[in-house]
Image 1 (cartoon, each protein chain N blue to C red):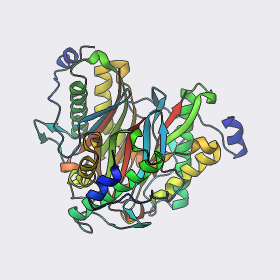
Image 2 (tube, rainbow over the protein chains, first blue to last red):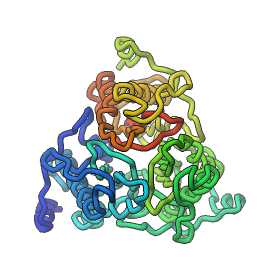
Image 3 (cartoon, each protein chain N blue to C red):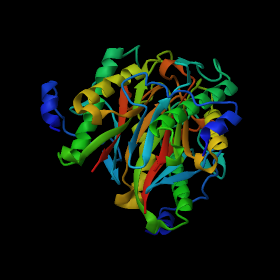
Length: 153
Length: 153
Length: 153
């Protein structure tokens, strides 16, 4: 899979893996599972979408932010694999946390911003199980946070 | 294990596995782990319990909803196993998310609605580790969401 | 690794593993992964830090509570290993849930109370991926809840 060419076709490119903003590591492998730390919508070291949905962030903006989180997660996996995507088996799980006003109940629609992107990019091996929930706040005021579990060889 | 007979004894039956309401798959297997997507209290395609505990949903109602979520998770596992429960090794983990008023602090009691049911049904192999937390809102206004990790052969 | 001597050097000791406060087990192993149930800041059976950050609990208090949660998680792992830490391979993941006022956005700083302690204690094998999120409430009013995934042999 040439993920870089496919991203290029989508008008995107893999950013550098975000450096952890606290005392943890971007990814840990145990057996053939890789656990990727929760990603916020960092672009060049700055969170680009903050505040709850929908009062401060529209659903469309939150979906775009979820895609940024997913792209950052892929950058972490790329770094973990040393760029060798032939070692990538499949995505397994996404955890999607949506900064939500109490009355907002479309977290699954926001999560699709990440999920649709990953399936479009990776195809069948991008399909994943998912838990999407609402929360009242997130680190750095992020509108969305996404964590990933992947299988590698 | 004849899960169908046991459910029948409990006055229940396995529903069809809920179709994902968004861009994800119901379950993914990596090695011998099966990750089941977050389940809301769907009955025949409709969320049957909505709103926060306890202002809109009583603890007893939320426990019943947690049991519905667990039953849906079992339906997903059943579908994943092609109905062959001899491949089921054990439950491993539940994540329980309870739509909660800010002052509500009995999420673990709500979670027992799922956990007690699973232990009653599956016995020792139904025992699981668990994280139960409160959240301010959930997809489709669901009162509870439950995700599962299981081990299979 | 003599975890007991190192804890002693830090002025700490491993408490008894907290008994589950509901219908679940403290830890489940599947393959070489151990899933530890969500830990609240229990000390001798009582939650020692309650209420949201920062209105009821300062960041420093929440960090201390996160460390208590981590210590309880280690106690569960110790019990699971029958005290034989030569079977411990590494920490893999922490989930950190911070009881948060809506405007609080430093959950990652609170999480460092657990993460820094674990890295100080365990060294390189204490490094972990992490998802830290805010929530509006937690079981028993706890200010923090921490769940763990570890790899063992």
